[in-house]
Image (cartoon, rainbow, N blue to C red):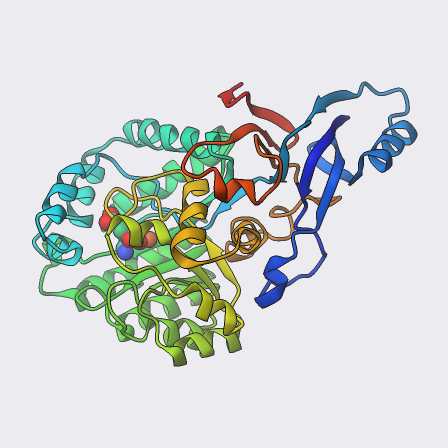
Length: 423
Ligand code: NIG
Ligand code: FE
């Protein structure tokens, strides 16, 4: 039995709703001041005030050893969940930052054969071992920043063998690293160089060859498409996501990131789990997302790194769309594993409140990867993933910005980071 006592504040995010939080609900963190948490066999069994927790331990320890952790002066949250990453790739693209500083546009770099296509070349060249090592380092950084579960997309293979390679690496790391990985097939991330001028032909191979192979091997739960002017059209995206659905892959969508092109509308039409980015989503598209219950995954780090205006989070929340936040960790438009810094950006560049931000990185993020039954809140029965921040309250997390305040991380009831270091 593990007993975490004397937390300055616990943001439980509890409340037993089976739906992601919308509107004012996003402000409700299920806060406990001066609280304690009990973990047994990797699962939370009690959370409450210090007095209640002490009583629970007394009554339930029954001769078992009780390991006590002091959380004095610290704020406890559920393990952070990052619902949108492209973490499995080889190489890096720091030279592109210099090109962009000289005025080159992200989409122009891609269309000139760089960007995603550059990372695809590096990823195709890489062995599984090399990809494991590079991705493992990224997972270590996620964990050090309090992230205990991520979604990870393929999309730097862009041909069957290498898409499978990325997804197999994700599966192996999910099994061997404390960070849990939920996989998404994103063969439609870009049209590969060898198919240039024949996007429809490539879409056919995604539909007829890749999706069935991924589904047969059980390598992904979701299917995602970069639906964008100059990448994949709404029609192509619809065809791919419909095919994915027929093979049991739930749809997600990179929607309206660079221009407004009907991505939010398509996500609503398909009943997608989430539509992500949404910098240029139309008002009608947002309203349709609210109606069909699509989660908006917002990525303010990508806007920041591409020096663009972020999504209109306030309008999206006001429209009744549940919002989650993510790093978008990838080698081109958001090379960071710091979800806490993304939270700072959500607050300081999109005007989300500290409470909304925490909801968006815990329970709503868990919903965005269909894991809200097991993670995303500190409630009896859920997997014991939690973070102790060196902060007197949750507001402080957005105030003392851009530094890592993570002190301790528990994954499945075991301490994996202590005093900011891997144990
Ligand atoms: O979400 N938009 C497409 N995909 C990524 C960028 C990937 C890359 O540049 O390597 C994104 O921004
Ligand atoms: Fe992305």
